[in-house]
Image (cartoon, rainbow, N blue to C red):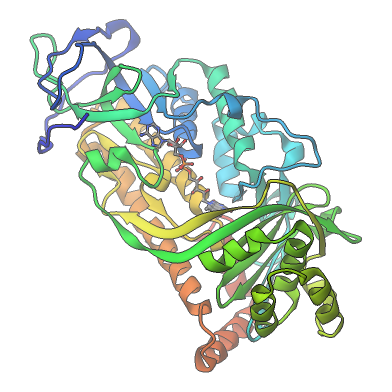
Length: 495
Ligand SMILES: Cc1cc2nc3c(=O)[nH]c(=O)nc-3n(C[C@H](O)[C@H](O)[C@H](O)COP(=O)(O)OP(=O)(O)OC[C@H]3O[C@@H](n4cnc5c(N)ncnc54)[C@H](O)[C@@H]3O)c2cc1C
């Protein structure tokens, strides 16, 4: 069902639609291009499309705050949320979709009461990061003592399965109640309401779902990921480029003294010319892999036997770029070849992750990597959060964290409007959200993008300069402290 193209008019509507005054209005068909059985129009203050980490956090934040809890809110999610609700794995298995959560994001999740629903035994706080140049070997080490970035217990960030987080958010929403959840229902069209004798909804987005529901929203939130239908409806362009890279992910089992203990919990990232390879700690002797590489090499990796795949991961952290090129071209037999080459390659054991000895069955997958940034996060009666607003290369582990920052800011913006008797959907009242988040996200995305480009070359001059830079930064605790604070989400604001 196609929405009729109409420019968005600016009109302020006073007052709030709350449970007691919500009326179901019989809508005419004027708002849509095609006809269908007339259905009952339901009116909401906030309709959130997308039940990923961003959408669920926003709803939890609105419901947890007594100022915004009277708002009538709905969630539309195209997938069934049952697999998330039932998410449960033994302590020897982990989902392959993990994200590092900054202490700032965790603080926000605590504030909205969601963190206590997270299965903490499946979360791994880590205390340091080691990042190095795969071509020159220049490195930088971050430890909790530097720059005061660390939180309680010296933790820099927390590795967590995305499903552990979304499950917790759903648990918190169940506890809070008051959200109309339409799951397994896709948005099939978004148009505008009508000016009827009972209410003027002509500037209100009306969302039609595959289940035949029609929801009018005082504020429509797009938390609907990279291909956001809400962003398309609002006519907001999203610009950027594909990196021509994919992120290969897998759950790995490690071996060696120390990996399972607190001191062993360090994130490792090596920049290879094809993209960075990262090994991020999970509880026990497990870690999650994010290996950014070309689609061609990713396909070769995914076609390997488990033993050869494990050997390639070990090689990625230990062997030279030339060795890796050769190994990628072998159709099989990497296990034997890597073992021989490792014995003839000098590397400092304490500077690389412990040996990978296994990969969890079915956990190897890949995701295309791209950069996208919406021209704006707001429109009249529309706000975008999370990947609907921006998609960033995962090398700095910031995508989900940026979404949490958006949600915190938008929830505060909505609360401010409610407190001051202002209309939550009017663009002017959403500008505080845009001004708090846009430039901040843009700056971070620019840095991440430049890092990717800076390390995606073997040009000797560039390698020399970047290695000098890395060594210089490594010797300056104050500069390292600055980077640590940015990575942990506690950085100074630039703008
Ligand atoms: C390999 C990799 C590693 C990463 N590592 C990290 C990391 O370490 N740290 C970090 O912070 N970030 C990381 N990220 C980024 C992070 O995963 C994303 O930023 C985050 O998951 C986005 O959450 P979201 O809620 O905005 O969007 P999504 O998770 O995409 O959720 C969007 C939701 O909208 C729903 N939807 C879409 N269309 C419709 C429709 N028409 N109708 C109804 N519902 C709809 C979808 O079903 C989905 O549930 C990584 C990403 C990748 C690819």
